Amino acid sequence: MSQRRVAITGLGLVSPYGGDLDDYFARLCAGESAVRHLLTDDLPRPLSIPFVSCPAFDPEAVLGKPLASMMDRFAQLGMAAAFAAWDNAGLPRTTDGEARTTWGCAWGTALGGTLAYEKGYRELWQKGRERLSPLAVILGMNNAANAHISIQLGLGGVSMSHTVACASSAIAIGEAFRRVRSGEATVMVTGGSDVPQAYGVARAWEALRVMAPGDAESSPRACRPFSADRRGLVLGEGGAALVLEDWAHAEARGASILGEIVGYGTSCDHSHLVRPEAAGQVRALRDTLADAGLTADDIDYINAHGTATSEGDPVEVAALKQVFGERAAQLPVSATKSMHGHLLGAAGAIEAITTVLALREQRIPPTAHLESLDPACTGVEHITHSRAQPLRAALSNSFAFGGSNAVLAFRAVPA
Amino acid sequence: MDSIGLIREFLKERLGVEPDAVTPEAVLSDQGVDSLMMLELIFEFEDRFGIKLSPDLKTPNSVGEMITLMDGLIATQKS
Image (cartoon, rainbow over all chains, first blue to last red; front, top):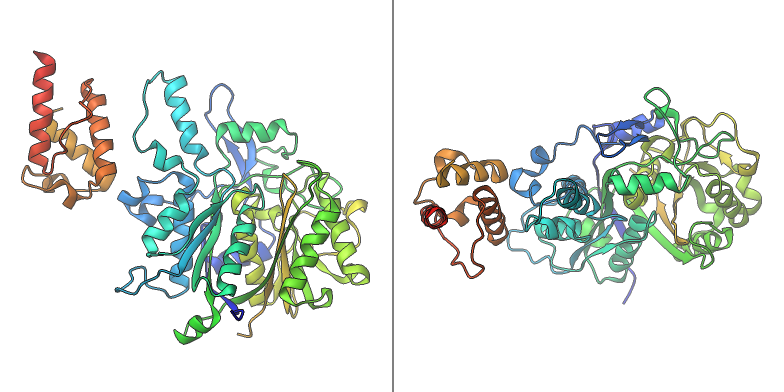
């Protein structure tokens, strides 16, 4: 079967800034952080951490009461993002009898319905109840988001979830891309959603000593990738979705094509659970370029994984230097997690959207709060202030705990 | 609270159904109560009245059938 070109015809997200896609990208380019201080009322000791929330998100207003009440927050964020991407693609939510049997959904989530299960534990162990609501199962299951998306949009093809820690949604997008490119699927809704504010989850990340500290005043600047004074990552909640479509199908219905996804590579370090290794990342980067039919010289921007941990950032830069060689010094790189935080299973999706918007707007968003570059992270061109320049193709990196690496390649489409 | 009061509160809170529309003749499935919601409604009912319904209970179709079922169980409970 001949390979199809894969168009990106819809983008949607629940923005931590509360606005639409244009607003999201404009704020990133302005270097505006969405990180705030989160203080909960959890027992026995409240969470007090820098965090990225979506305070303007009103699930009942966006989804309607009946649908919202059947979902945990990770599915609500995912469904809202998918609806936004679908509307952006100009596709009707109801099918008019058209059989969407080759249309599917591939969704990323690291934590799934953890928040729903945690609520159950509170009921049982803190409130002394002996039983749980019968909805607890369907709220908590990891495939709840993709199941709801397939039901709401009438997608009769594959509906699956991918759990690969911080690379969950990059891998979901890559697997969706392959299905459209091979001709197996006509349209795929893909992306990810996560809610890491679950008490047990946030406490576990704290214990790992990789979370940046911050109070009400310092939290917006808490995440400083590649900086000499970086203190760690900042978690965030969110949902982000893309509509991938067979190019010919998109053209035939007169859809606006926002960008093109051209390559995907994935690898495993197969060496350590949390210590990343450049060799594994290099393989994923090279596989992606080969898959896309691109060379290192074709890439004009890298959206880095860049979480601002002491170990992760230098290894990623080392991998880029190996792949890009002499050109690395002129290779524009930025880590937008400095502003939108680390959305775990939704990270790859929000960064894929950011990369597609960069290609579309021909503008590179910066790494915020990068004033003093760590000598261990030198050798690429760190973009610290947004810059307009011609961009032909770009990569988005996602490197997960467990050693799973995923890289996506995108190409600009002339407007 | 009586049975119809509880059903009205549940449908308003979960599905946004206006209490005026919840009459004994109304069919539950027309108001958005599918099999999952029915389980949740029964769960809420058991919780409020402190009783346990038999697992082989015949699922009511209308609001009126639901009220009859609930009232009967509450009466049995009290006697």
